[in-house]
Length: 404
Image (cartoon, rainbow, N blue to C red):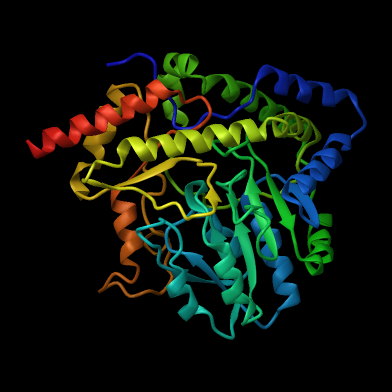
């Protein structure tokens, strides 16, 4: 077994970024926060950007704001396979989720099925760009415009990705991205509301006025966690401390979420990381494309189709294993060879929450198929070419053995 382990997620936070956070403690309160929001607005070419403590909290604020504008509509269309936190935001906003199956080509929402789900009661579509892979948001905008339905461009996993010449997060009426652990840029937690429809600015501001700051003690704990994680995800340190770190990993969906203002010191760190976003984005894209190329000859897996005119800043690289019973064996072999992999979300949403769908027949077969067979591979900027070669060798060796 290899001693050095490559972690599933590698947040690009260096000592220079952390020192920026320390310096922010000696300046006027919120100065860095305002600067960070302004730089994000430029980055996304948005009408306005607002920071918040988590992506889920940001999505909740967006939903509440949209519902004020269209109070007679209650339904929110989302993919059947996505982050369970989206369900929490919908439920807390007192809205009704409507699930849409995914495509086994793109691993994203099935746009053809989406067309049939829109009704007079549809408030919005949450267009989730899973794994950092862009949806056809141009097509979604065309479909929803006919019905006066809002579009939320969910780029929580896709900051830096581009489709049709535009950054993800800048499509539709409003976007959301995340700065949580394992996201494309990270300040341990955090999120950004990206407003493209000026009609939403005032209702979002009204919601934000009700939000309080974290306590000083909570901020101190958060700072310690960010410092610790920024070093722990380096492969050498990750390998040393893995027995301890593995105890903090959880695959259980959250039961609730808290809403706080984003902190000034996280904003300072975010500002310094944002200066490197193009470098990190290019690394994620190159690593993802190389993995796609290296694994393309393996017939026992399904690889995601990347839409033309898109540049994905992969958050994780997803593969589907056609034979359901082989997933755990492959993950063990990858780990033995020093590569951590992940199942991501264990079940589609209707298997986690009681949503009233039929139980005698699977209503979302593609989402269920993907959930049972998905493995994600690390693709972050700490990944090197020799690691990708090792991934390829492990998979070829594993499936050759299975065929033999």
